[in-house]
Image (cartoon, rainbow, N blue to C red):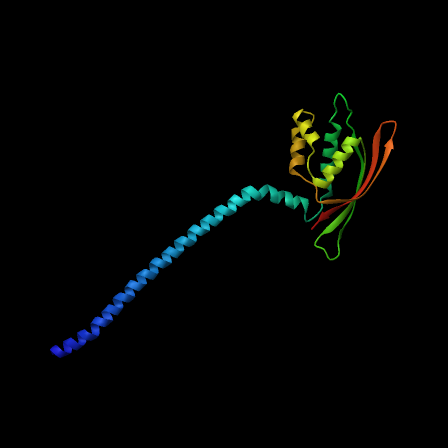
Length: 203
């Protein structure tokens, strides 16, 4: 009888020890899983925070990027931007200068894809009358989309409506390539009659 108990005990003790070890291993694995879950949650929260911070910082730049290379050229918006800019230039009178800028014609061609490139072009022609200073200003605006220093000064002097200035700040032209500029000088008024041809780019 004692022998049987001893044999049974010798078989049971190792299995009990093995069971205890597995139980301990399971608890350890459960703790590791919980730790990994917590780490994942923390990383997910950090990623969300980083994305939110990126959107705050990069948001305005992304908006401008979409406007400068749009999916489709919005001719109505382009005309409004050009008309508003021209109007601001016209308003920059001073004691020494009668500021002049008048748009007379704006025409758009059909948007055409450019072979073997990821973009399309929309042809554009513009006629306007202006003085030399405003001519240079307007060409710079077309090429860069940047509001000139003289317009910024005009805003500070109250020559330009804030609502118009803000519109020009928040709405920019698509990328443009000027193909040709023809100018003739009117000696009587000392103004330039300008004919300009260009292309706007879109996706």
